[in-house]
Image (cartoon, rainbow, N blue to C red):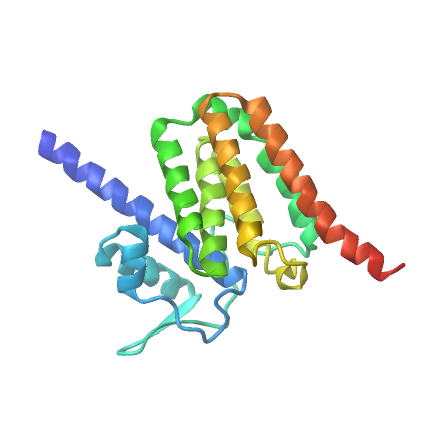
Length: 240
């Protein structure tokens, strides 16, 4: 009996890891951090990053290959195709949005569901959030930092235990490409900016751990408001 339970737990962990790897790659491609023709990280690199077996990584790559999002060349690696398909969990057409649209949506969505996170998050959820914060702190490049940040927000969303909210958060992540994110003012290309983001995300996590959703929401709303102002101000001044 114990062996059967352990085996099922291992299979469930493998399924979750595969989903995480698929989400990471989809988000990276949709955000154009991996453009058409770019080579993806190797199986070994992905296995190390996600603490997963190579078979789990191969499963994720096989799924994305089947969807037409990537293609594999024997002896060379895995590359991004020209396809722009996104997760089957999200709408087939990403709406045309601006960077400020993305941040406004985040302010409504992410701030709004923090009360559910405060009520439902487990110690395991907070451990997952802490792992992503550590990945942000130790990131050696901007792309790695942003990806860890994306995963942090997904870990928070997953703690709501609400499938619709989780899917909505995924759509926000993949909508960045449509928003022309590369054209906005720099949000995290200096160590000072990265440190500031890590500090406020840790404050949000600790407030949630203490079940203080009001404090967590106040911090999140304030920080997202700052980002909205930072993006809108240069656009406004351009037309003055």
